[in-house]
Image 1 (cartoon, helix red, strand yellow):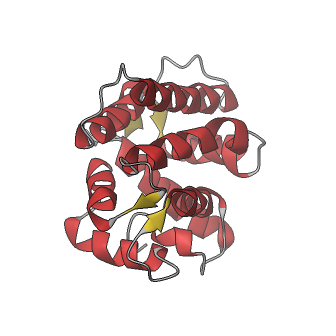
Image 2 (cartoon, rainbow, N blue to C red):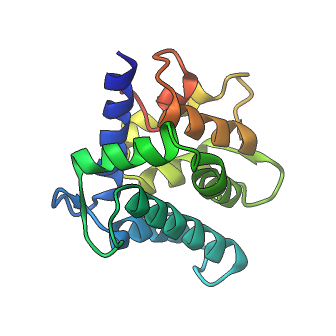
Image 3 (cartoon, rainbow, N blue to C red):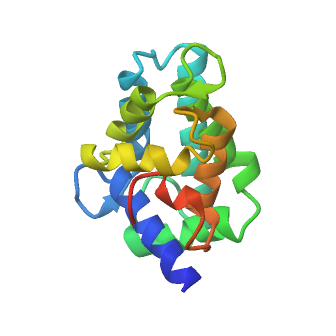
Length: 181
């Protein structure tokens, strides 16, 4: 059950990255996701914040390629994506040093005023970059707003990402990061 749930979430992540729908994720696809996020927030990829996000996404790609014993230049099919993500970030030890910094960079970008909070509009901007259906965003936000404050915290969004990408618990709030499963 937990494996099926994780695979379902990783398949969804694959679809977020594979924006052109060719069934293969390439480095340019992952960096393209980063670019969509940056554009949504009006951030330059050459700013300190933008460069941090781009660098962390590139680190994810390098780590994923290494886990699959690839050179980083070839595309990754869905099943291999699952295997690589699991080996590197779920059962492997690369989540905290590699993947978590990417989630922190994204969450901090969403917190444009630096108050530690991410409102519904910022969350919507983020999820639109991932290609999440507009109708699913509000429910996802409400499920992640665990305290019902009308805002997510940067730390809460980072925790939700960890639950989404790593947890096999069907009741984890982070499963709602990109809307209903």
